[in-house]
Image 1: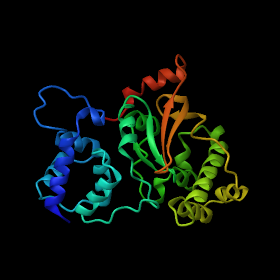
Image 2: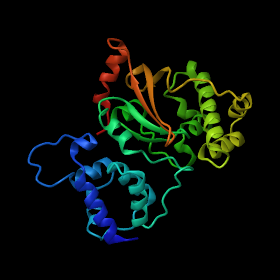
Image 3: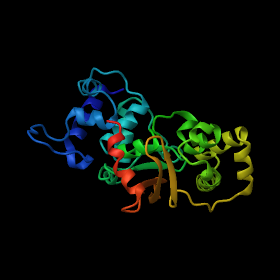
Image 4: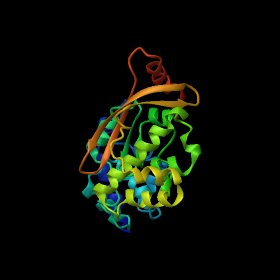
Length: 276
């Protein structure tokens, strides 16, 4: 771990960003250049004290999960992310097998959707980052670890994870999840993350095995309308618009509802139940 290099890099990248670059208000009496430490800490979901210690060359070695969070908060490019990992004493994530880097351009779009349910998902169905309204609508999908990071794995391995989808829609979601994973494995190969998830599910889920054997790859989910069972708002009918980054294998999902509809009013109410 290069403490001096890490401290300098974090400070310089923080100072190079303006609040508008990450979707934050500028506010008044801003005297320091770039972002404040507390703003970066909030974006990375870490304590300001932890970031301060890293910038002062006295913090512990950050984990790769923490470096990933810092990379997203600072909107680092892929090369900058790899450099951050090297300074932190970790090997850079494999660029093909681990598609969890969200490019700055996609993050900038997400920052401007701070009042809209939206999130970035990789080809394995792992949610990498969510807006707060998305967390309020769907729960914190970034908290999971291991195979459970994948919504596809959770869907077939634990029935409790289906509670946010009405029971009448479960069959369609099952077929769509299996089809999406099938497409991802075909593109990324047998050594990819989607392939790892498919092997685990083939061993654990009879339902998944039956769907996998059908070799269906043309079932829409992310681009279709769907119903979400919210614990406080009831059924919310949304349309999911998808922006795809083909180079990174990422999808930006944006949930909207028909203006004037009851579901549109419910989405507007999400701010009242959005976690701070």
